[in-house]
Image (cartoon, rainbow, N blue to C red):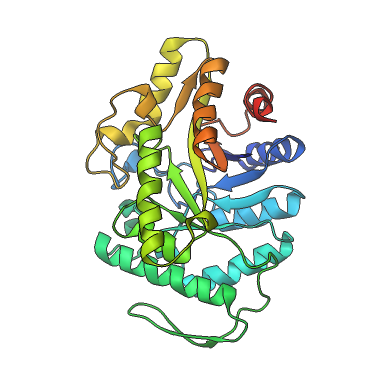
Length: 332
């Protein structure tokens, strides 16, 4: 069982990010994750809130590259890169470069992108959900071809093309950098994962994205897609992004779940997952040490390979160390 942390790069400063990375590298942790936004994502809707846009937002790929140079053991990735921000062939090149520099510790995580306001802010096209899904599937196919081909790649899609394009240097990791497909849409995204991905990730920031029943359901849908495309479902690892708080104060726990499950209450949000019915339906886990361990243990028994914790304030070394000792240590 692996455990990682998503370190927030929003409304913070570099020294706090650095101290968080150093703490994780010294501890029991297996992986380090960042997000990929150019404005701090704000509660409410994909349109964002203008009065929150001036906060710091460190660029995700740059931070990952710096982190690779600061660490020796941690796997490094994003939850997740937005496909609309960069050409996918460039992403493949950046990924193989970072994988070489880290000696095989990079994981490429990609999603279709949802944050409309940051596209508007920086002049990037924000197509319909259908077109973003089409582009995302093409991007995953193209990247996997570049990762796996021993020869230069030709590719002719609706949105992306390659003409005898090499990927050199290639991935350091054998057989290639793993591809984590972000999102759990049942018609398109999970099928794209079955065809081109290596890791499932269920996002606990999105309200009801973490209940055990929902996890089992998404895995069943993925397995059906794997059967359709002749893919062995055991080839795909399962991971969860889980905001976490250890507290014996029930009000603090309830407030944490409500605050980090905000998207469940807004049907206009790109990650809306339905009404938040109970703490067990939340993507977050908050409560006593025993309660948190029990909830995590349920997912471990269900077959989850890795849990990435979120919601820990960047630079709060005491919280990182407490969760490592009281929770991660329980699964040694």
